[in-house]
Amino acid sequence: MVDSSGQPTHGTADAATPLPLAVTLLSARDLAQPKILEHETGTLKPRETLTELVVSLGANHQDANGALQTLYSGDLLDARRLRPGLKAETYLDGDRLTALSIRAESDRSLLITRDQNGTWEATALNARLTPSYKRVAASINTSIYETARSLGAGDQQVVDFADAFAYDVDFQREIHPGDKFEIVYETYVDERGNPVKTGNVVFASLNGKALSRDFYRFTPSDDQTPDYYDSKGESATKFLMKTPINGARLSSSFGTRRHPISGYTRLHKGTDFAAPSGTPVFAAGNGVVVRANRYGTYGNFVKIKHANGYETAYAHLSRFGKGIKAGTRVRQGDIIAYVGSTGASTGPHLHYEVYIKGTAVNAMALKLPTGRKLAESPEILAEFAERKADIDHIRAESGAEFNQALLVSATTHQP
Image 1 (cartoon, helix red, strand yellow):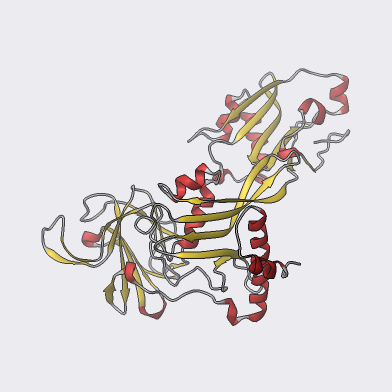
Image 2 (tube, rainbow, N blue to C red; image 1 turned 180 degrees about the vertical axis):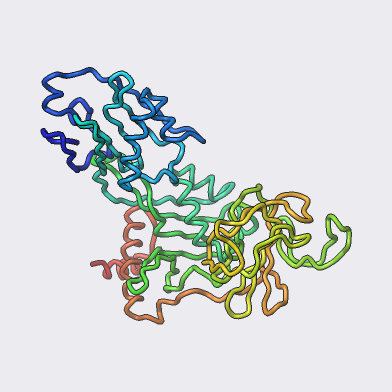
């Protein structure tokens, strides 16, 4: 928005949607001699640049580049992170761009206006959002994904839920019809009460044949690293991930087998996960990459050295992750490569191996060391108890059933 002298002012708007430009973007001189501006709206398509979109909405190339450069140079928009679906609105006098509105995020819009001297000015409009929470819980019929999505949870909430349990559960083999789950996640609504976006999962619970466990999202004040902790304050994080890939199907287990290509019977030293080419492969734990290159029948191959004599290996990869090479230090969950079918492979899959002091072991049967235990830091454990009580109160208000004596005890910790 601009004042009477044509200078931009900062402000907020409902759900970051600007007022009509005829009201907000015209100077006193413009109002004295009003012009009817053409208005076009469009959506960014896959493989389309933002400049191409703005030009397709009627602006000439020079104006489109000038307006967008104002955003990029002011760090208001990162051209590398644009996604299909982004919305743009142009206001035109012929092919002369007068103003441009970009819906950058669900709660943020960007306005680029042109003053009488032809200089572009950019303004960010942020929505006034109110945080809230939503709880979904049900028995699983087909999959957690389908059931949670049918109840209104988004893809990100299902991914966060899976991340919390990634160290304990093989979602392909250990989830059964009738198992129960619960997810509580953040939501944000605008001033009219309309949902604008969702946030983090703050509670995840699974009650099934393979495992029954609850996790609470908590950020300790000493290290400021968010993680999921069970009711005792023990981190969900393990030393190594059980499956360093999402959405894959276990296609071949550790053990003696007849090799599908050579025909020889020998020890299969790893676990195979069938997945489409290009599926991201994650570092199973913190460590240092000791090799990332072509390696015989393994094809494209990555090996990581971890603490305490552990090593993990990843084979048949289509390509390596950005910056992955020998000597690179990685953290658990970093993308190190992508699924492929290089080397001696009958189809796209990840071949995953775990070694302890040079000996291959069955990754699916490992009992791995746990992460942080808050009981070792009494002050931090007390912080966690307060946060856990807050989340349990939110759950109770949303219909979760508790032992009433325990709930009364828990709610006494609330501030």
